[in-house]
Image 1 (tube, rainbow, N blue to C red):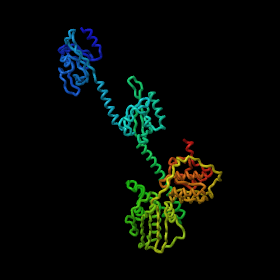
Image 2: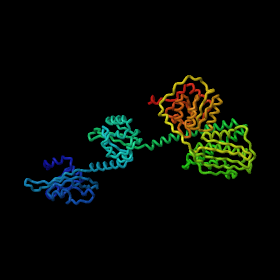
Image 3: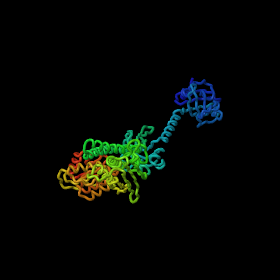
Length: 600
């Protein structure tokens, strides 16, 4: 019959067993039986485990187990872990607490052993180790903080992303990496965490040690203690700066594509209108228009190929390639045409214009000049002069052809050549000698322009103007457009509407000069001049009280910040659209600028 002490031990949830002085088991409770996975016979020696191992997996003989050591040495054994193997093969890590028992005379009578199951503790340690490894190896910044915002942990990725070491951040307030204008955001986060809310992914900006702004996607979760109380927060921050840059680049590329497509359509429209105005009959129009379109297509193909292959001329084309694409017709080329000169790469727009110029020269030479006879020749040479700015000097010389005389009227080809070069600050000289046409082109390859402050810093509203009469007749209209053909169409449209055209100006410098000269009633302003911003021109017009409309292939979001409410004429455009835009801005008093102080 169980003794009172045994009934007490049986009621315990902890595994307990006893032995006599020789180590024979005299009692064990059900918790011990469950831990061992068996019911040993009373009288077995030392321990009821099926087998015993050291923590490293080495077998541990029963007579060397902690209980055996306790009885042999006559003292307590503490801090020694072991692993019990059950008959089914499962193993249980445990911590034994064997204690010797003595009678009133101090004689050893046996021992009692308490076995503490370490399975949950070991599993928790494993999970903690896994979690620590995940935190340290994560590419994301993982940070913990108190409900007051004080940093308590800071992993390696947080160091990499923000530049602060753990020693620099632990104990500091999290606002150390938050831009001042976003401090209120942190207060909101802490209040929501205190209410037990988890904050899912949201995108924001943080400030690195070197001052960089880092775009991050954050997830914030509350940290609870053992009683379930919220004591802090865990933040996981993913650096999305590169993604943001890619999105911005994609947005810019889409805007640029939209602009280029519309600009190309406007150019085609301009070519058709200019060709039609000067064609004697439909057949002549078809041949001239088709030839100019093919010249434009070949030039675009050349530029596209350079961009696709990622060469150093990804934004332009080399002169010899432009010549070959425009003048060497057929697979075998034309040995009557020769060219030589150094390697010179022109920007995309300049390359397109030179291609059209060469097409016009080549077409005239084949129709009327040296290339109209088998014995005729064309020699093209170019050099680069380096002074304050680099100038390209290109000469076109025809010989061996029929006698030529200067034309009585100026055709589209001559106008196109002159205006195309003028738009890039160049000049052209045409000589109609008896021996053949000679054309000399001077084109700046580099020109330093003054930089103008962004209009986002210009915080003034347009000055009040006196009432103006509607209509555009006799009004002086400034045209700012770097695409020669489009500028020519704008000039035609305005002159047909009775306007007096000022310009056209193809560069920021030229446009500012005309604005400064004054005597302008309104302006049509391209949204971009060969990659240069037009903020300075818009600001100068505003200061002068001159109303303007943008003529652009870009969307409204690509306009200067302070002028995004301005009137827009989208490319390609009609005469009616241009005149309507001018009538609108002339009758509105010229309020182009949004007061940024009011908007902020």
